[in-house]
Amino acid sequence: MTTIESPRVDSPKVASPGIVDKLRGQVQQLLAFASLILIVAFFAFASPHFFTSSNITSILVAATVTGILALGTTFVIITGGIDLSIGTGMILCGVMAGVFLTYWGWPIWAGVLGAILFGALIGFVNGINVAVLKIPPFIATLAMMLVASGLALVISGTKPIYFKEHPDFQSIMNLSIIPGMRFPLGVAIFMLMIVIAAVLLSRTIFGRYTYSIGSNESATALSGVNVTKWKILIYTVSGLFVGVAGVLAASRLSSAQPTGGMGLELEAIAAVVIGGTSLAGGKGSIVGTVIGALIMAVLTNGLRIMSIPQEWQSVAVGCVILIAVYLDMLRRKGN
Image (cartoon, rainbow, N blue to C red; front, side, top):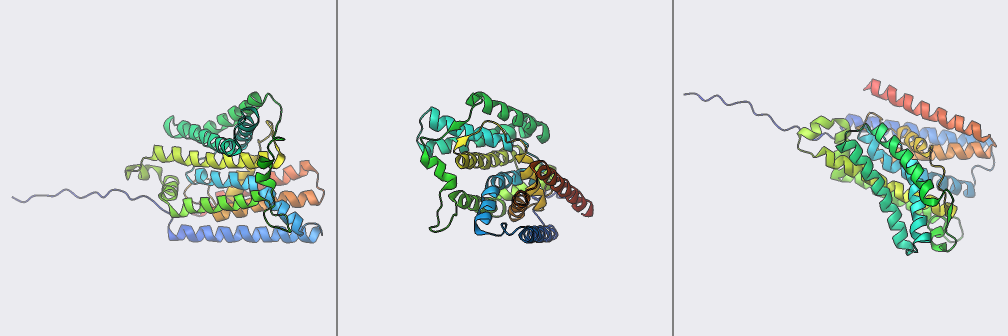
């Protein structure tokens, strides 16, 4: 008697960026880099004070905080999510650093580590809300944005927390590490975070699953990957970057300011999108994000040097965000 075998069904494989997607990403990075060069050339021609060593350092310092926020949220956006809480979350982490060091008297290493881990806690809560409770990322992180903003005011008593008794903390961002020139330690930390983010995204299973979830979450789940666990981890890692940015922002000002933060998330997201990361998920790179962060920093710095009023600077940044999102829409239509 002839036995009829049922057709074998292979388990779906975890998706990863293909060659075509990589080529498209490289083209986008080249376009973003060309845009950066053009913007730098324009401001250098428009103002003799732009292309100086001190101003270049100022641009790198300005790009540090926003850039680190953008690095962390790159992972989230690649999964097809969004995080609107990174700006106020950063402020809350700075406030917690003030609490740990000034109010509770912790040693500096413990206070800094505590603030960074508090950022991870914010990301972890976001991950639980998105992956376990299935709340849309926009709503979940919007709620966290408001919660973080409120907690920063409540915990600080609506007053700044100063680090006058902790000069070592102030040095984290501002200490010059190259003799004879101003090259702040904070910029070196930014570069280190770039390397860490690039390795995580391109050389580890963490990065592979990040791309896979953004490309096709259902297929990833069918392949045996615990999508819920990895989503929580991705948001938590993003929170670690928020914590680092919070420490550097507080160190730069020598105080933890409980107000502000709203708007930084838009600049960070714009930097990510300008660099070629798709809001639809599945595509993106750390190199592109860094280029996008530099574009945002150069634009703001150049407008300030040209004495453009603050309100018009906001208009320019808003237009850049609109253009970045529109270009992302065009890229998706072309795929």
